[in-house]
Image (cartoon, rainbow, N blue to C red; front, side):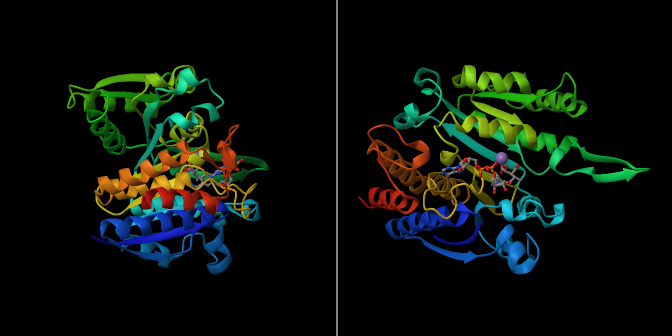
Amino acid sequence: MHKKIAVLPGDGIGREIMDGAIKVLDVVARHFGHQFDYEFALIGGDAIDQEGTPLPENTIKVCKTSDAVLLGAVGGPKWDQNPSHLRPEKGLLGLRKELGVFANLRPVTCFPDLAEASTLKMEIIKEVDLMIVRELTGGLYFGEPKGRQNENGEESAVDTLFYTRREMERIIRKAFELAEVRRKKVTSVDKANVLETSKLWREVAEEVSKDFPEVKLEHMLVDNAAMQLIRNPAQFDVIVTENMFGDILSDEASMLTGSLGMLASASLSDDGPGLYEPVHGSAPDIAGQNKANPLAMILSAALMLKYSFSMNQEACAVEEAVQQVLKGGYRTGDIAQEGTTILSTDEMTQKVVEYLET
Ligand code: NAD
Ligand code: IPM
Ligand code: MN
């Protein structure tokens, strides 16, 4: 197959880990007889510096005319004091909205060889295999009104949690579709004891569940969900939730895999190109040091192969290579354990490439 991929490395470790994903994809293309053409574009701080905006028009065009989009990470201290419209994160949110990728899938599985790298006990995490389905283009991130005010000397700020029924329905339906081919359980996470949006969310979840009689639906309040993720994470199959709850719970859940540097994500729309990015950010504390774990980015590329190109065998090959590297005792600093070999970002990528080639 011939595919065009938009590549947006972004800021900080984004560039370092993107190199790894491309190297891995090149091997996949060679092995399986595909052609991947990459078109690079600017986003985030990099785009602010070069074009004066975090999301240049050309970037949107490159993404919309590609079969899929790979993104590293955006953000960094250099731009932290910028006004809202000139923040790197604004570029990422704008891109998600432009592409209409409302469904953010964040799979969390325990890699057996990493179980001991987690701060949690092995017996708690060893059975973990869950999928967080985070609504990505609505909620508190986008609702209006949003902004700062100053009335008669009284300063205030507002963000709005707003969802239409249609926005709730399509993300909840996506969660049920995924659960149907997994362990047939959806946990809908909300704050229905307080929030109006959550009350409607529950109603919609109940309605959608009628179309999936084989899938069990349970509701859980978000504060309890945060606790249950640490207490007994193996109870979860698919978790579906609104944008900000999903953001927070997925960073929490990343520790079940041993490190944020392991967690990949796929963001899907109903028709256009999917967006694939690691869950972590630009990690300014280790940027430019060739220390970052490239596996979340590489696994995000594997999700692209699976969800956008239906290349299941190819995706499995990449995932298998990652497992083998971990089994071989190779680690980046974030997942280091006693008796393992610590590698740089580039060396880790090289190991994945070697396993893929054998
Ligand atoms: P972060 O995810 O960048 O880093 C949190 C911690 O995890 C840091 O200690 C970092 O070193 C570590 N870490 C993250 N990814 C790693 C990897 N691949 N390998 C090894 N260690 C890794 O979160 P933060 O520090 O809160 O945010 C930094 C910047 O990134 C901010 O500007 C934030 O807005 C941005 N951010 C961007 C995205 C994105 O582009 N999708 C996601 C989250 C945060
Ligand atoms: C993520 C990030 C982003 C989000 C930020 C950088 C806007 O934290 O992808 O999880 O909150 O969605
Ligand atoms: Mn986040």
